[in-house]
Figure (spheres, each protein chain N blue to C red):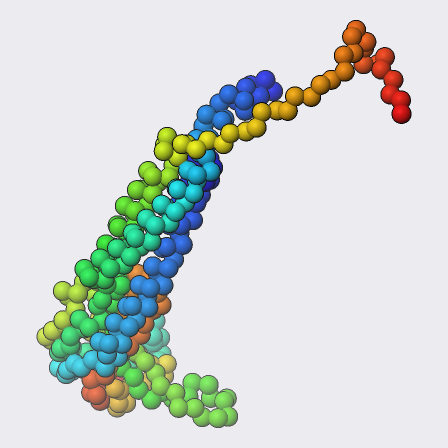
Length: 192
Length: 108
């Protein structure tokens, strides 16, 4: 603290230390808030209005000229309240509508058959503000067309859920999901 | 160039150092620590109450500016107890007259 440079160094060291402590406290407090809000046990409702399965023969849809790929699109209604995910440390929440279904074992050479599940994303959204956290979607079309590793998609049953990734200002990322308990059977292709 | 450097070290650098005395250093250190802690607590509390982490950041920014204003200049209040050095002791040297250094012979 003798000269001006020493005093500048000491002040910056104090500030840096206090900011580090604050960051830890903020992160811990926001995690506690999330757990108190029961962030991983939110309820919501979903219903699929229309599902479409069409076979595509272009590479941008996963197929090629000889082998078609079944592409599934949806339109759906969804209602859920994600405000419990927002606290003072939430920067944004990334939500995505996922279909999870039993996959075929991709590695055919593997001797042990594993219970593999495939996940496909139909729709997603970035929510930046608490005011936008109540989702009430009517007849929304899926953002992405969805296909499997294998050609067939029809007749397989997927469980639809809304997964989310909470991105904080400081601290670890947190994942969770709203399980709609909505078994959804992919339709057969119409132009097979 | 050497002369310029020497001039800078002797006449300009001490004026830019803004030195303060020991009591002043103690004062600044404890004052800055106190202010840092107070601002951290206020920042956390205000941010938590308003549920906005940006508020915490702004309060800490204000605190940093205040700290710099308090700590950096060498205010007269920090120089009230200057160190007084002892006067150099007087040592009597033998009168060597007109003898030159090379003429002196040391003997046991």
